[in-house]
Every structure is written in C-alpha cells, then in structure tokens.
Image (cartoon, rainbow, N blue to C red; front, side, top):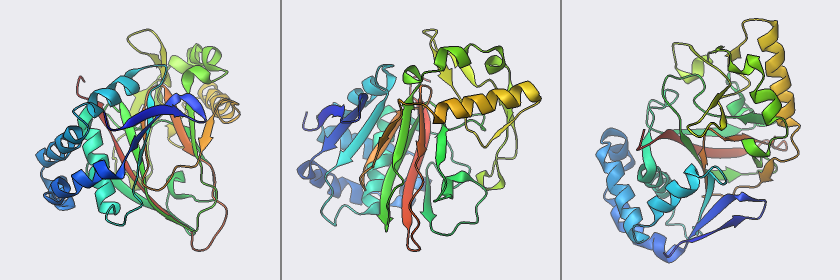
Amino acid sequence: MSFTVKDHKESKRVQVIQFKEKDLDRLVFPFKKHSITSLEYKPFTRFSIAKSIDEVFDNKLGETLLKILNDRDTGTVIVEPEINNKKFDKEFLVKLSTGIAHLIGTPNFDSMSGKYYARFTVKHEDNSDSYLRKAYTNLDLHTDGTYVNEKTDWLIMTKLEELNVSGGESVLLHLDDWEHLENLSEDPVAKENFVWGSPKSKNVGYKVEHPVFSKDKNDKPIISYIDQFPEPKNMEQGLFLQKLSDSLEESQNKVIFPLPVGSTIFSNNYFWLHGRKAFKEHTGLSRELLRIRGTFFTN
C-alpha cells in the first residue's frame, strides 16, 4: 500500500490515512474526465472516480476504510492528502471525497442542497436557521440524519477552504468513552420514540419518530441525536434531553483537534458524535465544508 495508516495523536480510536502528492498526481488525469456537473447528474460516474482512486492505492483503500469504519474500537478515519500544490483545488477535493465515499457505500440524497453532497460556508455574519452556520457558537455533539427517513451509517466532512480562522476545532466523542453511556442509554425515556423535525433550510417536509438510543447487532448501544431537532412530548422527555446534552458537552473524553485544509473526517454515525468549537471573531472569517452521508453497500 502506498498510503500510510497511523493512530491520531489525540486518540488511538481515530485512524489517520495519509496520501502522498505523487499518488494524488496519478488521479489528476482520471479526475479531469468527469466534471462536477457529470458527477451530480450521472451517478455511475462517481463509481468511476472511486475505482480510479482504489487502483492508485493497489485496490486496498476501500477494504481498509471499511475495516476501520466498522470496527467499534475505531470507527473514524482522518484522510490527510498532501495538497500543497495548487493543482489540487477545491474541485479536486470534491472529487476525492466523492470517490472515497463510493468505495464503501452510496450517499443519501441531501435535501438541503438537492444533491448527493452539500457544500456550505461558515462566515462572520449569518441569518440561517441552524447552528450549522453559527460561527461564534459551539456546534454541540450530535449525529447526522436524525430527522430523515433514510439510514445514515456514515458521514464525510471535508474542509475545502478557510480564511481568517482561529478556533473552530473539530470535536469528536466515541460512545464507549462517554462517562454516562450506561446510565443514560438504559434510561427508559431513552428508548421511547421522540419526534424529530428540522428547520426550513433542511428542505424536509415531514417529521420522523425514533428513540435516542437503540442497539446494534452485537447488542451495543448506538445513538441518533442532535440538540436542535427533537420535539419532546412531555416533561420527562424534555428533562432527559437536557441531561443528555449537558453530560455529552461536559465529557472529559472528547477528542478535540484542528482539521487541516483539504482533510476529511470519515466517521461511523452510530457510535461517534461530532461537533465544532466556536470560532474567534473576525469580520473576514470564512470556512467552506463539504458533507456527504450515506449507507454501507451491505445495507
């Protein structure tokens, strides 16, 4: 294998895969065959991109990603491409993230963008209806896909660009490292159905019901939760959600780190929660992210 795999300096649960520039150079030509528009309109082209990536890495990358993402002891990969050269622009990064995603599964339709992926910018000023773009507020720990009917096994978050940024570190928490997992996951309220809605910007015209906690095939707890979208039916549900939110944010076992531009967080969405620290105020602040979320091929 020409890529390297190592433990992240902040957590052995988080694996880091590094791509060298010489290998990325081999992707420039096959990537040029497919425009961003063709990727959006012709789904099969995404698999062509994925195959090109896997071939560059001796057909080992897909199986490595699947092994890490499905391993309860790990479950998160940080992909760090060596992209100092300007030829590796944002379009290249979109294609790289698209290909990596299609090595392990198929993306869900992203209602917010109307595509298989979403690109969004966090700026100094914001008039949105979601914490997603609130630069100077912590984006608290959560999972994705809480308010949609589709399964969401995994998610990708790629940092495409940032300017005038201080703060805004990525935050992750593995369920098994959370101090209150047993207590709160076994609370009877945790197993009740909660109503989950979403703000208008998400473009989802329905609500769903599901518990916060359930079990996987190995009888291990998994979570589906975000603080902004549940609609508690009664006092018990409301107080449970407050306790849950407080205990997650107060955890001493969060993994906090700056994500380099061009890098991707690739996480199992059932036993990892993710968030972001607040930025330090700057009128020229700008960060652009790409998000892809979906299901493993086996599902």
